[in-house]
Amino acid sequence: MATSLPQSFYRAEQVREGEQAVARALDIPMYQLMLRAGQAVFDSINQYYPNAARLLIVCGAGNNAGDGYVIARLAKSAGLNVTIWSLVAPEKLSGDAATAWQEWQDCGGSVIKTQPTVTQFDVIVDAMLGTGLSRAVEGDFAQAVRVINHCHVPVVAVDIPSGLCANSGCVKGVAIAADITVTLIALKQGLLTGQAVTHRGELIFAGLNVATAFARQAEPAGQLISDDIKTQCLPPRARSAHKGQFGRVLCLGGDHGMAGAVTLCAQAALRTGAGLVKVVTQKDHTLMLVTRQPELMTQSWAPGQSLGDALSWATHIVIGPGLGQSAWSDALWTIALSARLPKVVDADGLNKLARQPQHRDDWILTPHPGEAARLLGCEVKEVELDRFAAVKAIQTRYGGVVLLKGAGTIVYDGTDYAVANVGNPGMASGGMGDVLSGVIGSLLAQGVDLFSAATLGCYLHGKAGDYAAQAGERGLLASDLFPYLQQLVD
Image 1 (cartoon, rainbow, N blue to C red):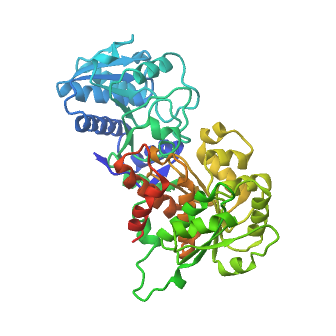
Image 2 (image 1 turned 90 degrees about the vertical axis):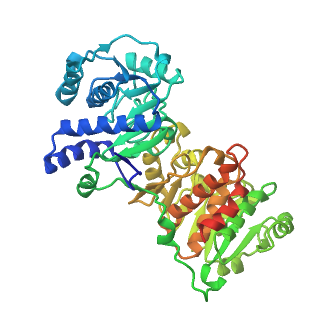
Image 3 (image 1 turned 45 degrees about the horizontal axis):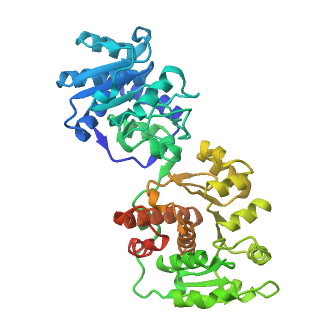
Protein backbone atom coordinates (compact mmCIF):
# COMPACT_ATOMS: atom_id res chain seq x y z
CA MET A 1 0.00 0.00 0.00
CA ALA A 2 1.46 3.36 -1.00
CA THR A 3 1.87 5.94 1.78
CA SER A 4 3.12 9.49 2.15
CA LEU A 5 6.86 9.97 1.84
CA PRO A 6 8.83 9.10 4.97
CA GLN A 7 11.10 11.73 6.46
CA SER A 8 14.29 9.63 6.46
CA PHE A 9 16.26 8.71 3.36
CA TYR A 10 19.08 6.26 2.75
CA ARG A 11 21.88 5.31 0.41
CA ALA A 12 21.18 2.46 -2.00
CA GLU A 13 23.59 0.03 -0.34
CA GLN A 14 21.92 0.66 3.00
CA VAL A 15 18.58 -0.36 1.51
CA ARG A 16 19.94 -3.46 -0.21
CA GLU A 17 21.62 -4.70 2.95
CA GLY A 18 18.89 -3.49 5.26
CA GLU A 19 15.99 -5.13 3.43
CA GLN A 20 17.67 -8.51 3.77
CA ALA A 21 18.40 -7.91 7.45
CA VAL A 22 14.82 -6.87 8.20
CA ALA A 23 13.43 -9.83 6.25
CA ARG A 24 15.53 -12.16 8.39
CA ALA A 25 14.50 -10.39 11.57
CA LEU A 26 10.80 -10.63 10.67
CA ASP A 27 11.17 -14.13 9.20
CA ILE A 28 9.81 -12.98 5.84
CA PRO A 29 11.11 -14.72 2.69
CA MET A 30 12.65 -12.27 0.24
CA TYR A 31 10.28 -13.53 -2.42
CA GLN A 32 7.39 -12.42 -0.24
CA LEU A 33 8.80 -8.89 -0.39
CA MET A 34 8.95 -9.18 -4.19
CA LEU A 35 5.30 -10.20 -4.25
CA ARG A 36 4.43 -7.21 -2.07
CA ALA A 37 6.45 -4.90 -4.32
CA GLY A 38 4.62 -6.10 -7.42
CA GLN A 39 1.28 -5.64 -5.70
CA ALA A 40 2.17 -2.10 -4.59
CA VAL A 41 3.13 -1.06 -8.11
CA PHE A 42 0.06 -2.68 -9.61
CA ASP A 43 -2.13 -0.90 -7.05
CA SER A 44 -0.57 2.42 -8.08
CA ILE A 45 -1.23 1.68 -11.76
CA ASN A 46 -4.88 1.01 -10.93
CA GLN A 47 -5.09 4.20 -8.87
CA TYR A 48 -3.49 6.53 -11.41
CA TYR A 49 -4.56 4.84 -14.64
CA PRO A 50 -7.83 3.04 -13.84
CA ASN A 51 -8.83 2.83 -17.50
CA ALA A 52 -5.60 1.25 -18.69
CA ALA A 53 -6.32 -1.96 -20.59
CA ARG A 54 -3.02 -2.64 -22.38
CA LEU A 55 0.13 -2.88 -20.31
CA LEU A 56 3.72 -3.15 -21.53
CA ILE A 57 6.24 -4.29 -18.94
CA VAL A 58 9.89 -3.93 -19.91
CA CYS A 59 12.12 -6.28 -17.92
CA GLY A 60 15.84 -6.52 -17.40
CA ALA A 61 17.91 -9.13 -15.59
CA GLY A 62 17.73 -8.59 -11.82
CA ASN A 63 15.18 -8.36 -9.05
CA ASN A 64 13.71 -5.28 -10.68
CA ALA A 65 12.71 -7.63 -13.53
CA GLY A 66 11.28 -10.04 -10.96
CA ASP A 67 9.01 -7.25 -9.72
CA GLY A 68 7.95 -6.76 -13.34
CA TYR A 69 6.93 -10.41 -13.75
CA VAL A 70 4.88 -10.22 -10.54
CA ILE A 71 3.12 -7.09 -11.84
CA ALA A 72 2.44 -8.87 -15.12
CA ARG A 73 0.82 -11.83 -13.42
CA LEU A 74 -1.37 -9.61 -11.26
CA ALA A 75 -2.42 -7.52 -14.26
CA LYS A 76 -3.22 -10.63 -16.34
CA SER A 77 -5.31 -12.04 -13.49
CA ALA A 78 -7.21 -8.73 -13.39
CA GLY A 79 -8.08 -9.04 -17.08
CA LEU A 80 -5.57 -6.61 -18.57
CA ASN A 81 -3.84 -7.28 -21.86
CA VAL A 82 -0.19 -7.71 -20.78
CA THR A 83 2.96 -7.80 -22.90
CA ILE A 84 6.41 -8.38 -21.42
CA TRP A 85 9.34 -7.12 -23.46
CA SER A 86 12.43 -8.82 -22.03
CA LEU A 87 15.80 -7.28 -22.83
CA VAL A 88 17.63 -10.42 -21.67
CA ALA A 89 16.92 -14.12 -21.99
CA PRO A 90 14.63 -14.83 -19.00
CA GLU A 91 16.10 -18.32 -18.77
CA LYS A 92 19.21 -16.64 -17.35
CA LEU A 93 17.35 -15.14 -14.39
CA SER A 94 18.25 -16.50 -10.97
CA GLY A 95 16.86 -16.49 -7.45
CA ASP A 96 13.57 -14.74 -6.76
CA ALA A 97 13.47 -13.17 -10.21
CA ALA A 98 13.57 -16.66 -11.76
CA THR A 99 10.74 -17.74 -9.47
CA ALA A 100 8.65 -14.75 -10.56
CA TRP A 101 9.30 -15.56 -14.22
CA GLN A 102 8.31 -19.21 -13.67
CA GLU A 103 5.04 -18.16 -12.04
CA TRP A 104 4.39 -15.87 -15.01
CA GLN A 105 4.89 -18.86 -17.31
CA ASP A 106 2.69 -21.07 -15.14
CA CYS A 107 -0.24 -18.71 -15.61
CA GLY A 108 0.16 -18.82 -19.38
CA GLY A 109 2.33 -15.75 -19.79
CA SER A 110 5.04 -15.30 -22.39
CA VAL A 111 7.66 -12.74 -23.35
CA ILE A 112 8.77 -11.01 -26.52
CA LYS A 113 12.40 -10.21 -27.21
CA THR A 114 12.03 -7.70 -30.01
CA GLN A 115 10.86 -4.13 -29.73
CA PRO A 116 7.07 -3.79 -29.94
CA THR A 117 5.13 -0.80 -31.17
CA VAL A 118 5.18 0.93 -27.82
CA THR A 119 2.55 3.51 -28.73
CA GLN A 120 -0.16 0.84 -28.78
CA PHE A 121 -0.07 0.51 -24.97
CA ASP A 122 -1.87 2.52 -22.31
CA VAL A 123 0.87 2.28 -19.66
CA ILE A 124 4.50 1.17 -19.75
CA VAL A 125 6.16 -0.30 -16.65
CA ASP A 126 9.92 0.24 -16.32
CA ALA A 127 11.35 -2.87 -14.64
CA MET A 128 14.72 -2.81 -16.39
CA LEU A 129 17.38 -1.61 -13.96
CA GLY A 130 17.27 -1.20 -10.20
CA THR A 131 19.27 0.64 -7.56
CA GLY A 132 22.51 -1.25 -8.18
CA LEU A 133 23.37 0.60 -11.39
CA SER A 134 27.05 1.59 -11.38
CA ARG A 135 27.89 2.36 -15.02
CA ALA A 136 26.38 4.06 -18.01
CA VAL A 137 23.35 2.43 -19.63
CA GLU A 138 24.22 1.15 -23.08
CA GLY A 139 23.22 -1.32 -25.79
CA ASP A 140 19.68 -2.70 -25.86
CA PHE A 141 18.86 -1.07 -22.54
CA ALA A 142 19.83 2.39 -23.75
CA GLN A 143 17.82 1.90 -26.92
CA ALA A 144 14.79 0.80 -24.92
CA VAL A 145 15.06 3.88 -22.71
CA ARG A 146 15.16 6.17 -25.74
CA VAL A 147 12.18 4.47 -27.36
CA ILE A 148 10.10 4.68 -24.19
CA ASN A 149 10.99 8.32 -23.55
CA HIS A 150 9.80 9.34 -27.02
CA CYS A 151 6.53 7.42 -27.19
CA HIS A 152 4.28 9.76 -25.12
CA VAL A 153 2.80 6.83 -23.17
CA PRO A 154 2.59 7.10 -19.34
CA VAL A 155 5.51 5.35 -17.65
CA VAL A 156 5.56 3.82 -14.17
CA ALA A 157 9.04 3.08 -12.80
CA VAL A 158 9.60 0.27 -10.31
CA ASP A 159 11.67 1.53 -7.36
CA ILE A 160 13.80 3.93 -9.45
CA PRO A 161 13.75 5.04 -13.09
CA SER A 162 16.22 2.92 -15.04
CA GLY A 163 19.43 4.83 -15.68
CA LEU A 164 19.36 6.96 -12.53
CA CYS A 165 22.03 6.56 -9.86
CA ALA A 166 20.22 5.79 -6.62
CA ASN A 167 22.79 7.66 -4.54
CA SER A 168 23.52 10.80 -6.56
CA GLY A 169 20.42 11.14 -8.75
CA CYS A 170 22.57 11.69 -11.83
CA VAL A 171 21.77 10.12 -15.20
CA LYS A 172 24.07 7.28 -16.17
CA GLY A 173 24.12 7.86 -19.90
CA VAL A 174 20.36 7.82 -20.46
CA ALA A 175 17.48 7.40 -18.02
CA ILE A 176 13.76 6.76 -18.10
CA ALA A 177 11.59 9.86 -17.73
CA ALA A 178 8.82 8.37 -15.58
CA ASP A 179 5.43 9.84 -14.84
CA ILE A 180 5.29 7.91 -11.58
CA THR A 181 8.01 6.18 -9.56
CA VAL A 182 6.93 3.71 -6.88
CA THR A 183 9.92 3.40 -4.58
CA LEU A 184 10.02 0.48 -2.19
CA ILE A 185 10.85 -0.19 1.50
CA ALA A 186 12.91 2.98 2.04
CA LEU A 187 13.48 6.32 0.34
CA LYS A 188 16.67 6.41 -1.75
CA GLN A 189 18.54 9.72 -1.55
CA GLY A 190 19.23 9.87 -5.28
CA LEU A 191 15.51 10.25 -6.01
CA LEU A 192 15.36 13.56 -4.18
CA THR A 193 17.65 15.99 -5.96
CA GLY A 194 19.13 17.17 -9.24
CA GLN A 195 18.28 15.37 -12.46
CA ALA A 196 16.22 12.79 -10.59
CA VAL A 197 13.52 15.34 -9.81
CA THR A 198 12.80 15.55 -13.54
CA HIS A 199 13.09 11.82 -14.27
CA ARG A 200 11.15 10.39 -11.33
CA GLY A 201 7.80 12.11 -12.00
CA GLU A 202 5.49 11.83 -9.01
CA LEU A 203 7.23 9.95 -6.22
CA ILE A 204 5.17 7.32 -4.41
CA PHE A 205 6.40 5.35 -1.39
CA ALA A 206 5.43 1.75 -0.64
CA GLY A 207 6.85 0.39 2.62
CA LEU A 208 5.74 -3.21 1.97
CA ASN A 209 4.84 -3.52 5.67
CA VAL A 210 8.51 -3.54 6.66
CA ALA A 211 9.38 0.17 6.51
CA THR A 212 9.00 0.73 10.25
CA ALA A 213 11.18 -2.25 11.08
CA PHE A 214 13.73 -1.14 8.48
CA ALA A 215 13.91 2.36 9.97
CA ARG A 216 14.55 0.93 13.43
CA GLN A 217 17.67 -0.92 12.31
CA ALA A 218 19.17 1.51 9.77
CA GLU A 219 20.81 4.89 10.41
CA PRO A 220 19.39 7.41 7.91
CA ALA A 221 21.68 9.15 5.45
CA GLY A 222 19.58 12.28 5.97
CA GLN A 223 16.12 13.74 6.37
CA LEU A 224 13.53 15.32 4.15
CA ILE A 225 12.58 18.75 5.47
CA SER A 226 9.16 18.11 6.98
CA ASP A 227 6.06 20.28 7.19
CA ASP A 228 6.33 20.48 10.98
CA ILE A 229 9.72 22.23 10.94
CA LYS A 230 8.08 25.63 11.41
CA THR A 231 6.43 24.71 14.70
CA GLN A 232 9.69 23.12 15.85
CA CYS A 233 11.76 26.22 15.14
CA LEU A 234 9.35 29.17 15.44
CA PRO A 235 7.15 28.95 18.52
CA PRO A 236 4.26 31.42 18.83
CA ARG A 237 5.28 34.86 20.00
CA ALA A 238 4.38 36.02 23.47
CA ARG A 239 1.62 38.61 23.55
CA SER A 240 4.12 40.96 25.24
CA ALA A 241 6.71 40.60 22.45
CA HIS A 242 8.60 43.64 21.13
CA LYS A 243 10.87 44.17 18.12
CA GLY A 244 14.02 44.14 20.20
CA GLN A 245 13.53 40.44 20.82
CA PHE A 246 13.71 39.44 17.16
CA GLY A 247 17.11 40.61 16.08
CA ARG A 248 18.67 43.25 13.88
CA VAL A 249 19.63 42.16 10.37
CA LEU A 250 22.25 44.12 8.43
CA CYS A 251 22.02 43.56 4.67
CA LEU A 252 25.16 44.52 2.76
CA GLY A 253 25.02 44.90 -1.01
CA GLY A 254 23.44 46.72 -3.89
CA ASP A 255 26.27 48.08 -5.98
CA HIS A 256 25.42 50.38 -8.90
CA GLY A 257 22.70 48.83 -11.04
CA MET A 258 21.92 46.07 -8.55
CA ALA A 259 19.79 47.74 -5.90
CA GLY A 260 16.90 45.35 -6.54
CA ALA A 261 18.76 42.34 -5.17
CA VAL A 262 19.52 43.81 -1.75
CA THR A 263 16.01 45.33 -1.63
CA LEU A 264 14.41 41.91 -2.13
CA CYS A 265 16.72 40.43 0.51
CA ALA A 266 15.83 43.10 3.07
CA GLN A 267 12.10 42.91 2.32
CA ALA A 268 12.17 39.14 2.80
CA ALA A 269 13.85 39.59 6.19
CA LEU A 270 11.09 41.97 7.23
CA ARG A 271 8.28 39.77 5.90
CA THR A 272 9.52 36.75 7.83
CA GLY A 273 9.71 38.46 11.19
CA ALA A 274 13.07 40.13 11.80
CA GLY A 275 12.74 42.86 14.41
CA LEU A 276 14.71 45.51 12.51
CA VAL A 277 16.44 45.50 9.12
CA LYS A 278 19.07 47.94 7.85
CA VAL A 279 20.60 48.09 4.37
CA VAL A 280 24.11 49.37 3.69
CA THR A 281 24.37 50.22 0.02
CA GLN A 282 25.46 52.80 -2.55
CA LYS A 283 24.33 56.36 -1.81
CA ASP A 284 22.29 56.52 -5.01
CA HIS A 285 20.04 53.69 -3.77
CA THR A 286 18.98 54.85 -0.32
CA LEU A 287 16.02 56.97 -1.44
CA MET A 288 14.68 54.21 -3.67
CA LEU A 289 14.91 51.71 -0.82
CA VAL A 290 12.91 53.70 1.70
CA THR A 291 10.41 54.67 -0.99
CA ARG A 292 9.92 51.03 -1.88
CA GLN A 293 9.87 49.82 1.74
CA PRO A 294 9.64 52.59 4.37
CA GLU A 295 10.10 50.10 7.22
CA LEU A 296 13.72 49.64 6.16
CA MET A 297 16.61 51.61 7.60
CA THR A 298 19.32 52.60 5.14
CA GLN A 299 22.89 53.75 5.27
CA SER A 300 25.04 54.82 2.35
CA TRP A 301 28.66 53.80 2.45
CA ALA A 302 31.84 54.41 0.49
CA PRO A 303 35.33 52.98 0.93
CA GLY A 304 37.22 54.73 3.68
CA GLN A 305 34.10 55.37 5.75
CA SER A 306 33.50 53.54 9.00
CA LEU A 307 30.87 50.87 9.41
CA GLY A 308 31.52 50.47 13.11
CA ASP A 309 28.16 51.76 14.29
CA ALA A 310 26.20 49.59 11.88
CA LEU A 311 28.16 46.49 12.81
CA SER A 312 27.77 47.23 16.53
CA TRP A 313 24.04 47.65 15.99
CA ALA A 314 23.54 44.39 14.07
CA THR A 315 23.04 40.93 15.48
CA HIS A 316 23.36 39.20 12.07
CA ILE A 317 24.66 40.00 8.59
CA VAL A 318 23.50 39.05 5.13
CA ILE A 319 26.08 39.86 2.48
CA GLY A 320 26.10 39.23 -1.24
CA PRO A 321 22.83 40.24 -2.92
CA GLY A 322 23.76 42.79 -5.56
CA LEU A 323 27.23 43.11 -4.03
CA GLY A 324 28.98 43.18 -7.38
CA GLN A 325 32.68 42.85 -8.19
CA SER A 326 33.92 46.44 -7.87
CA ALA A 327 36.44 48.09 -5.56
CA TRP A 328 33.43 49.25 -3.50
CA SER A 329 32.22 45.69 -3.04
CA ASP A 330 35.72 44.39 -2.26
CA ALA A 331 36.10 46.92 0.54
CA LEU A 332 32.64 46.18 1.92
CA TRP A 333 33.34 42.45 1.84
CA THR A 334 36.59 42.90 3.76
CA ILE A 335 34.88 44.90 6.48
CA ALA A 336 32.03 42.39 6.75
CA LEU A 337 34.46 39.51 7.23
CA SER A 338 36.13 41.35 10.10
CA ALA A 339 32.85 41.41 12.03
CA ARG A 340 32.41 38.48 14.40
CA LEU A 341 28.73 38.15 13.67
CA PRO A 342 26.83 35.16 12.24
CA LYS A 343 26.40 35.65 8.50
CA VAL A 344 24.48 34.50 5.46
CA VAL A 345 26.73 34.66 2.41
CA ASP A 346 25.17 34.60 -1.05
CA ALA A 347 25.74 35.65 -4.66
CA ASP A 348 28.85 37.79 -5.18
CA GLY A 349 29.83 37.20 -1.57
CA LEU A 350 30.33 33.56 -2.54
CA ASN A 351 32.30 34.54 -5.62
CA LYS A 352 34.64 36.62 -3.47
CA LEU A 353 34.96 33.75 -1.00
CA ALA A 354 35.93 31.42 -3.85
CA ARG A 355 38.85 33.74 -4.67
CA GLN A 356 39.90 34.12 -1.02
CA PRO A 357 38.92 30.87 0.71
CA GLN A 358 38.57 30.72 4.46
CA HIS A 359 36.94 28.39 6.95
CA ARG A 360 34.41 29.64 9.52
CA ASP A 361 31.78 28.01 11.67
CA ASP A 362 29.44 30.97 12.05
CA TRP A 363 28.05 31.35 8.52
CA ILE A 364 25.54 29.89 6.13
CA LEU A 365 26.65 29.67 2.50
CA THR A 366 23.87 29.49 -0.12
CA PRO A 367 25.40 28.69 -3.53
CA HIS A 368 23.57 27.76 -6.69
CA PRO A 369 25.42 25.16 -8.83
CA GLY A 370 27.45 27.79 -10.67
CA GLU A 371 28.64 29.39 -7.44
CA ALA A 372 29.26 25.93 -5.99
CA ALA A 373 31.49 25.12 -8.94
CA ARG A 374 33.52 28.30 -8.35
CA LEU A 375 33.85 27.48 -4.65
CA LEU A 376 35.19 24.04 -5.55
CA GLY A 377 37.21 25.06 -8.58
CA CYS A 378 35.39 22.65 -10.87
CA GLU A 379 32.76 22.60 -13.62
CA VAL A 380 29.03 22.93 -12.97
CA LYS A 381 28.44 19.48 -14.49
CA GLU A 382 30.71 17.99 -11.81
CA VAL A 383 28.59 19.57 -9.09
CA GLU A 384 25.41 18.23 -10.64
CA LEU A 385 26.84 14.71 -11.07
CA ASP A 386 26.73 14.29 -7.30
CA ARG A 387 25.12 17.12 -5.38
CA PHE A 388 25.54 15.31 -2.05
CA ALA A 389 29.29 15.04 -2.60
CA ALA A 390 29.47 18.68 -3.74
CA VAL A 391 27.72 20.13 -0.71
CA LYS A 392 29.92 18.02 1.57
CA ALA A 393 33.07 19.20 -0.19
CA ILE A 394 32.05 22.86 0.15
CA GLN A 395 31.28 22.47 3.84
CA THR A 396 34.58 20.69 4.47
CA ARG A 397 36.51 23.47 2.75
CA TYR A 398 34.61 26.52 4.05
CA GLY A 399 32.82 25.35 7.22
CA GLY A 400 29.49 26.46 8.65
CA VAL A 401 26.29 25.30 7.00
CA VAL A 402 26.01 24.96 3.24
CA LEU A 403 22.75 25.15 1.30
CA LEU A 404 23.15 23.95 -2.29
CA LYS A 405 20.26 25.41 -4.27
CA GLY A 406 18.47 23.73 -7.15
CA ALA A 407 15.84 21.06 -7.65
CA GLY A 408 15.92 19.20 -4.34
CA THR A 409 17.96 21.76 -2.39
CA ILE A 410 20.42 20.11 0.00
CA VAL A 411 21.51 21.51 3.39
CA TYR A 412 24.59 20.10 5.13
CA ASP A 413 26.38 21.14 8.34
CA GLY A 414 29.23 18.64 8.44
CA THR A 415 27.10 15.99 10.14
CA ASP A 416 23.52 16.03 8.90
CA TYR A 417 21.94 16.25 5.46
CA ALA A 418 18.47 17.69 4.85
CA VAL A 419 16.72 17.83 1.48
CA ALA A 420 13.78 20.01 0.45
CA ASN A 421 10.78 18.52 -1.32
CA VAL A 422 9.23 21.91 -2.14
CA GLY A 423 9.65 24.47 -4.92
CA ASN A 424 8.90 24.50 -8.63
CA PRO A 425 10.43 25.50 -11.99
CA GLY A 426 8.74 28.89 -11.85
CA MET A 427 11.25 29.81 -9.17
CA ALA A 428 14.04 29.75 -11.76
CA SER A 429 13.93 33.54 -12.06
CA GLY A 430 15.99 36.51 -10.94
CA GLY A 431 15.86 37.53 -7.29
CA MET A 432 14.69 34.23 -5.81
CA GLY A 433 18.05 33.61 -4.16
CA ASP A 434 18.08 37.12 -2.73
CA VAL A 435 14.73 36.44 -1.08
CA LEU A 436 16.04 33.17 0.34
CA SER A 437 19.08 34.81 1.90
CA GLY A 438 16.86 37.43 3.54
CA VAL A 439 14.56 34.75 4.93
CA ILE A 440 17.47 32.83 6.43
CA GLY A 441 19.01 35.98 7.90
CA SER A 442 15.67 36.81 9.51
CA LEU A 443 15.38 33.36 11.07
CA LEU A 444 18.88 33.62 12.51
CA ALA A 445 17.96 36.99 14.01
CA GLN A 446 14.93 35.40 15.66
CA GLY A 447 17.13 32.92 17.49
CA VAL A 448 17.05 29.90 15.18
CA ASP A 449 20.34 27.98 15.00
CA LEU A 450 22.33 27.87 11.76
CA PHE A 451 21.28 24.44 10.48
CA SER A 452 17.63 24.94 11.42
CA ALA A 453 17.59 28.43 9.90
CA ALA A 454 18.93 27.06 6.61
CA THR A 455 16.46 24.15 6.51
CA LEU A 456 13.45 26.16 7.66
CA GLY A 457 14.37 29.02 5.32
CA CYS A 458 14.59 26.61 2.41
CA TYR A 459 11.20 25.14 3.31
CA LEU A 460 9.45 28.50 3.72
CA HIS A 461 10.95 29.81 0.48
CA GLY A 462 9.95 26.74 -1.55
CA LYS A 463 6.50 26.49 -0.01
CA ALA A 464 5.80 30.17 -0.67
CA GLY A 465 6.94 29.62 -4.25
CA ASP A 466 4.53 26.71 -4.61
CA TYR A 467 1.64 28.80 -3.32
CA ALA A 468 2.53 31.68 -5.62
CA ALA A 469 2.84 29.32 -8.59
CA GLN A 470 -0.83 28.38 -8.31
CA ALA A 471 -1.40 31.45 -10.48
CA GLY A 472 1.11 30.07 -13.00
CA GLU A 473 4.76 29.07 -12.93
CA ARG A 474 5.97 30.95 -15.99
CA GLY A 475 6.41 34.61 -15.13
CA LEU A 476 6.60 33.99 -11.36
CA LEU A 477 8.48 36.85 -9.65
CA ALA A 478 10.56 36.75 -6.49
CA SER A 479 8.42 39.47 -4.93
CA ASP A 480 5.32 37.32 -5.48
CA LEU A 481 6.49 35.21 -2.54
CA PHE A 482 6.17 37.94 0.10
CA PRO A 483 2.49 37.59 1.07
CA TYR A 484 2.86 33.81 1.32
CA LEU A 485 6.03 34.07 3.39
CA GLN A 486 4.18 36.26 5.87
CA GLN A 487 1.35 33.72 6.10
CA LEU A 488 3.72 30.80 6.51
CA VAL A 489 5.60 32.27 9.48
CA ASP A 490 2.45 33.35 11.30
